[in-house]
Length: 150
Image (cartoon, rainbow, N blue to C red; front, side):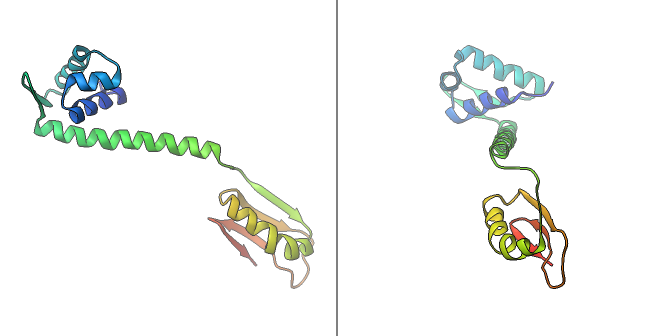
């Protein structure tokens, strides 16, 4: 059975605080519950992560390796959650603009589309002008905040 993010976070707090009591205070558990969690983790992994004395806790070499990986994993989880929540809050989707070429050339391309791209760079996917006449630019694609005209 793999460690849960909650177990990993508790192990990290124990390592950072240097005591079961300090970590327990931080996570809202009793010191004995935190000590048992670490003991179960060590039993499951088949290796001692923390050397214990009556006055001091010290990470073993394996404990240092595990702590480094725990930090990476918890940071990745936080990053993924932040990315998802920020993406949810931002404007997303496709914006399609269909208009006459003269409006596209004189109003949209020089004014409205650059403003839209700057305020919502991931929104504008493409646009087209119908009834195109000679010499009228055709707006073809917008990606990563850059407007391309043909």
